[in-house]
Length: 266
Length: 283
Image (cartoon, rainbow over all chains, first blue to last red; front, side):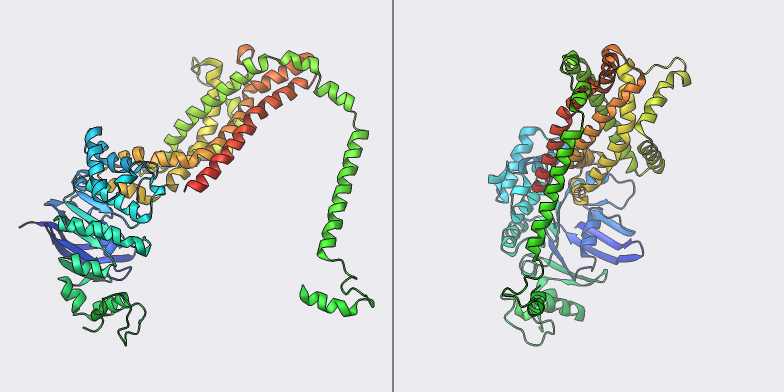
């Protein structure tokens, strides 16, 4: 069985700062993999290396059997099959919602106007913002904008979806809608690589959780293992800080995050 | 403040009202304002009595001379001013966009060329450019600027405005967040497709207000066409006013021309301000 994503010995430096220090991992067809870890651990950089928004300093990235790190590869063609959702949405502010979802279909896939519009409407329907077709992004809430961004990526019929902290810029009450869309996507069998701080989402939806710290993968495995019974001290201290931010010292498991207490001591 | 009035009170001369000895800030402000009004009134009175109004009116606002300016001041002079300005603006914007893209190019010599051009032509007086254009036929025998007199005037304004437009557009292109390019590229768009569909349209919106101001300053610079020695049907506002002032020996035509400039520049200035405010709200 071929991997949807295969990464070997990935290094990335920004100047003297080495952000990724040799990462190996794979995502299989239909899997949902969540990458967690403290900020600055390199998890977003890792995601951005998968579609080569960041050029790796060293290493190999193979997506869908195509080696993207090959200098002669047609990156634009390869990226068509890779949807990406950003933390800050990055919708095109000068276009309506519908145009946002249509533009790449028209200009990249060369779809006709009618077909592009049909696909756009279907995807906007799927993420629950069909009523906002003719609005501009600035008229939408953050949660709606992010769902439009997901529809925009889905309209390209990607084989793999990359999510870079998709809910981190949202007001807490809007997070749920976006996560629900992602959950439905996962249930449909989409291959997904998700960088996130939403532990309950990772726990419930992910097939595998990857914990990164200091530019390397510290621990990976099924969520009940990595989040439920972490083996490494670094994983444990990160999880206790995330799951129970009120108790940095970590003595008593307080009634902090709803229903998420057991991670702290195991 | 409270401290001061507290300490001032008792030291004042056996007053019924403590703090009366010093002027309160409010009173001081009132006196200051009264003085300003007195100065203004004195200046107005002096102007009315000592200036030779009749002489001024005779030289700067003589009605029968003003009448001679019409309707050619609009039909010929203003029309030509607009032709020179719009021509210089359109070509300057296109050339400026090219220079801006060159300045952001990954090919280093392009960056150098654009930088050198911008630095030179932003640093030179516009008049100097026009004087140089006069010598072009001497330097390049047989060379004719296409479009004749219009072409020469537009060429001069293009050379000048391209340098300024390049800097404005570069700032606009750089003001478009990097995430926009990233989103476009992640959808499979090529670099140039992302520029055309996503970055440039947003950059143009960002630079509309400063560009309107640039248009106003270009409109004023179009007066330099005067130095190309144009005549007849090619005169723009300043040349037109200057010629008529010479033949009539009276400054009134220059005043008429000045008002005509303001007729265009003031509304444009307001427009730029409104666009700026609207943009401030929109983003």
